[in-house]
Length: 239
Ligand code: NAD
Image 1 (cartoon, rainbow, N blue to C red):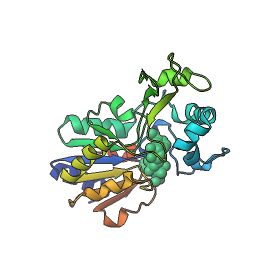
Image 2: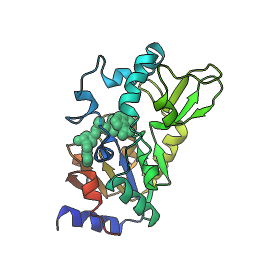
Image 3: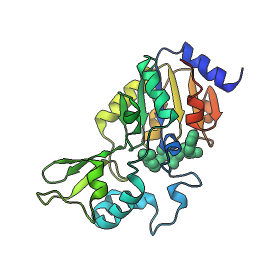
Image 4: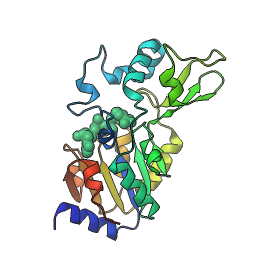
């Protein structure tokens, strides 16, 4: 039996599947990840992305933060790819109970997924730090310099920056989903960013699948490892 057949069989036998993903899920939509060859870590900036996307940098060098953020993080023309679409289809069919994502691009929701735990927030929500008014991503993209609300407050994306804590309600939901599913598919993530990557340890079942272009730290504990493009692999799932 080849790996695709095995994946199909495992999904068929599973009662509730959870998907845990990262930036690699959106590379086939044209959004660069962090750690691949074309990823943001391998492009030249005055500071590494991790430094720019930190709370210290946001408050200390706000204009520079926004230059990078508008240029690299607001990919508003990107469309869901085969991976996002198949996961939404699996949820609709009653197979998949949740998507837990480290991505901030909103593509799972655009594909039709309903239960999505966004561990690192979303570029689609932006709040005035003073009055709490919400601004959409298009407003942020069209703004220049440091975006301010009409009340004068600084607008901040609802994205978890390095140095900030994850939202406890989102973590609780993600942990509950992972701990109670009988199949966990991990895909498109280096599993290098904590605490997000640590959440997979709540899985207790015997159907752990990893679909990634490069090796991950969880490969040795997986029941099936598929080295490949997540969109290509997931599109072969038959419902
Ligand atoms: P990462 O960049 O550390 O790792 C991406 C992984 O995906 C790599 O192991 C790579 O080999 C693999 N990959 C790339 N394209 C793939 C494909 N088509 N199919 C299968 N595997 C593929 O990403 P991460 O683990 O998510 O951690 C980076 C952090 O950066 C996250 O916290 C995330 O919030 C943030 N980020 C998000 C986006 C986004 O929202 N789209 C983009 C860049 C970074």
